[in-house]
Each structure stands twice: as structure tokens, then as C-alpha cells.
Image (tube, rainbow, N blue to C red):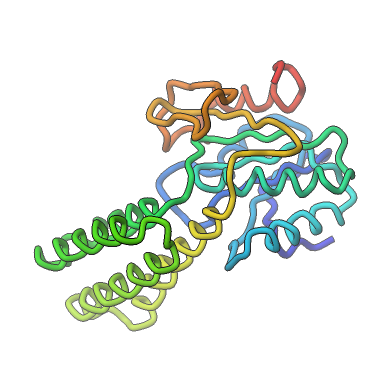
Length: 261
């Protein structure tokens, strides 16, 4: 059947392995790298653009489409903030009783989505355009980020709206200075808005599970977001975690049942 919520990364037969991460481009390796490097008789799928919440409704649609294929879900993988949604998807699949045992849950450099996450992405997005912004524009943007987190730490919609408005204003200034086409300017703002929507959706998730206990795989600068978590640490930088052969072999062995987790 044709999938509308999932993009196929690789299909070597066997069970399904859905992967949760933002589908946009970035410097860090993604699940496409992992799917290409893991030797397993399984079908790796990546969630398409997540869209708006609530997360419970989104997860329900994702799970229904997976189960409608008639293929068991062997594992659910999550990366970074997507990990908080991977747990919810695995629980939703397990709750149907169609997957026995429940899907294995493996989370890579898992972090919660917070107000600081949104402002952090705002800062990163502006850094890529720093040479086209004035010193005052950059300073004002930094002040805005700090004020939003201080005043509204848990009000992610308010933070997102303020950041989007400021980002759009700054991109208009950049577009004017560089004589960029209006469609390109709109695309830049749309991409930024889509990522903030994704983070807000992820903020509705979490790392507590009903159906199983997740396994956290971490790079040196990351710690599991919960105490006492089952953890395997790799001496591999965050950006390379999903493309490293050592991680690929570990995941392959895990899927084959060759690790006791």
C-alpha cells in the first residue's frame, strides 16, 4: 500500500522500523545514513513532515498506517527531539496488541524539546546569516531569545510566534540587501516555521513508556534525559552518530537479538 505519512529509506524485507526525526536537511547524519549502513532484513521508514498537533492524534495516524501494511513493527527509532515522539509511537503500536513482543525502542542522543530548544534553533538559524545582519539586529535577536525563555519558559506557542515574527522580519531585511527573490525569502521563513512546529509537537511527548523500556545511545556530549536509563555510550560526535559503522553494527546486532537489551 502507498504510505502517506512515511518515506521509505530502504526495504530489505521483513519487519518495519519507523524512524522519528525532523525530515529537513542538516549537517548531522540522519536515519537515511543509518538505514543504508545497517545490515538487517527490515524496512526502514522515516516520518514525513510532522505537521501540527496534538501529538496523540498524529501518533494515532502514524501507527494506523504502519499497522495497515500487515507487517510487524520490530523497532521504533528516535533521534534528538524526535525521541520523545518515538516513545509515544511505540506505545500506540503496542496498545493495539498487533505487535508481540512490543517494538524495541532505541533513542539516539535524546533530548526534550523546550523553550530553550526553540530559541537555540533561532540563534543557529541567524548564525548562518550573520554576515548579512547588522550588529544591532543580532544583539536585539539575542536579547529577544533570552527574554522569551526567562518570561515564558513553558509557553512554547508564544515563544514560537515571537521568534517566527522576528525571523521573518530579519529575512526580509536580508532579502532586500541581497536582492533575493520573494519566493526564496518565503521559503526560508517556511522552513524555520516548520522546524519550530516540529519542536512544539515533540514537546508533547516524553520518555516514560507503558509498553517497554527504551535504550539510549549517546555521543560524548549527551546524557539520557531520565535517571537510571539503559544507556550505551559511543565515542562518536553527535553529527556522525547515525553514520558511524560501529553504531551501524551495534544496531544490526540489536535488531537480530544479539544484545541482551
